[in-house]
Image (cartoon, rainbow, N blue to C red):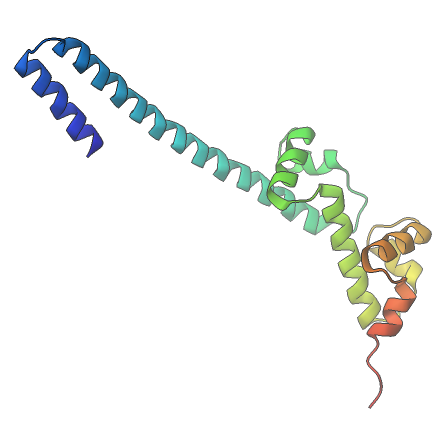
Length: 161
């Protein structure tokens, strides 16, 4: 509608040939060009958002498949063919937390599940979810849950009936 109305206004100006009709028609043409540029920019933003989400999803898939291993930002960036700094910015922007924090959250959630569902030693759970140092795992777990792994296991145990 905007284009049809603008185009019709330009035709009316040329047909009427009143004072300043050329300048008014040029102004209408500039306005139409700005509308066209707005549409192009919106489409590019939409395409960029889609592209960013695709890269974000690739990074998420890689992290979820490999968080139990010793993975680095470089590993994740290589998996989705992005610069590590750009990926870090993109991930934080979309997820609301850093990649490191996200990986640690996955690890702690898996540890919580294993503490509830198994009798595996804490050291085995720590190693199996990507912590090389049991002490570091215990500190990270307590920081995240406010409980030590053993306190969590004891509190999560289902009492006999």
